[in-house]
Length: 271
Ligand code: AMP
Image 1 (cartoon, helix red, strand yellow):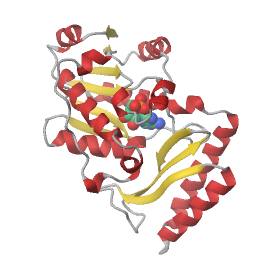
Image 2: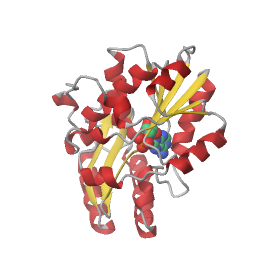
Image 3: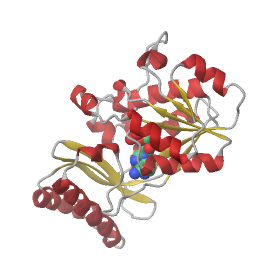
């Protein structure tokens, strides 16, 4: 695994390859990231992973400053997989230097779910993904369905401008059914119990909703119950079509999307 710390080395290292699989991350590597790497390794000739905590996609400075970082541990884990050919760890200036300001806008109809609650977040995500795509020029980008809206928007954005294909990969969960996330590092035991209860409860709810006509009403009731019982704040709990992310009234072809806060940690998931 070659560690790349600047763009000169990046271009030189990738020059002769045209079948590159790319796994963008913000580090604190976990099994979710490793599953994307495994998929890239099986699909593409070369796999490049990036670790870059992109300040421009954080709508809160505090959230950015608190984002868990552990580069040494990440390098060790990634090396051990023997599935990563290149690890790119750029600095801010490698991504944003001598480049024009972004004028990426999220359309009104896409200002739903996290785009509604995290102002400027996806504008920052699309901007950094376009820059990374231009620097690396991968054939395929592997992304987790855990962040489904992120996958959806990046795929739509890149499809119109580049040849790169964005591949969705399944969500990896722990034994408590909690979706793995770097932010889970901030959870204490009690918070983990709550997140586990919530995940199991939504998996069950989705099954029970299958033949139900009053889906919207059921979701509202469930949301209120979970908030009160677990003493958490739920930002949204919505059933949406996976094809276009429109609100859906049928379970088939749809997923339950949730964003919630446990002890000030914001988590998202979909079932
Ligand atoms: P992050 O480091 O959180 O920005 O995530 C980097 C990539 O890993 C994104 O494409 C995420 O959707 C994906 N990812 C994060 N958590 C998981 C998970 N539990 N299962 C599968 N993919 C994940």
